[in-house]
Length: 399
Image (tube, rainbow, N blue to C red; front, side):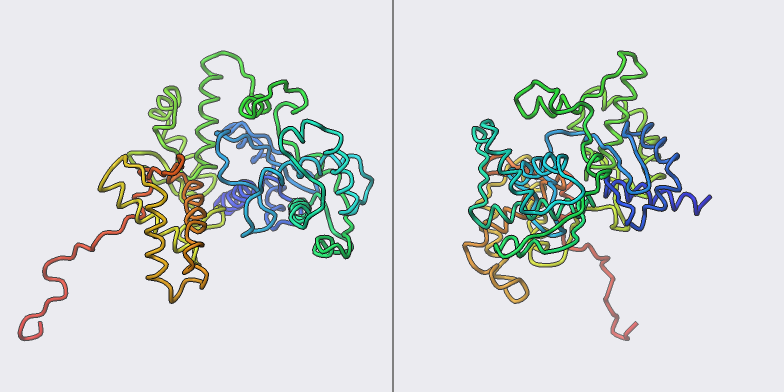
């Protein structure tokens, strides 16, 4: 039983980290072995569906929050998250691949995307420009191709993306039709949605119709809360509606216990909310603390904001105040931070990256030119150690 539970935990954690799990992943055999249990668990606890075949496993997740844009896709670990243009190119690339045969080239994919952009005046009206006339646009296309390779939708068989960016070559790919077909994970086809605003479109494609009964309403609340415990760094009570707070008040022990048993995540329950901590570190896409200049700066700014919260609760902290503190930190740590961190022009860029990281961890919301530290950031506060009066003291005889 212990071995079976360990395998199931590894499978759940792998699917949470990679909802599109290719057969080449080390955890894929465990997902296939426990597919029936995994399908039942995700369906009952989260309302998500799981499809498993010989080539991949696809967990069709619906996020609990549709307004969280802090954790975008990236082509490779350490790369910046996708910009708006890269997301548009990704969608256009997927549409173009639907019309391709078994193989395609990066140059041909670019031509089809160019044709799609030219044929759709709404893209131009929305400010989307794609001409391949500069290297930045070619880099965006390469980032999309690399993400599709990471997802195993494409498999490179010849050539190189760097040569394409330089204009000296091309790359040839084989298309995995099954993986391509499994990419879309919406409840409704986007083309069937008439709404124009982004928030309305997101709500429409993720809408989950349910009967208007007490059981169905409770099930929907349970799904939303479990999704947040699994996906979000912190579940904050003040972000919940009345129905969610009421359900959590009576079912907290069960919800937290179910997630802990299935994933091995450790609950940390505080007055402000609940965090499921990943002690192993393999079910986390954003770590803190983290090594390197940026990671150290983020930790020190979190300490600064935690102190501000303790001394002046509810006070928004101006970004210029953070910039000034970061500049002082750069001078203090110049010996072991990277060289360009000492450049005054680099400080606001570094601070912006650190604040984005803190926002992704639900530790601060950003409002204009201010940030507001939230209670969970208090875990990064540092205080002087309180030592017993006799610790480290010796009598005259050395005892």
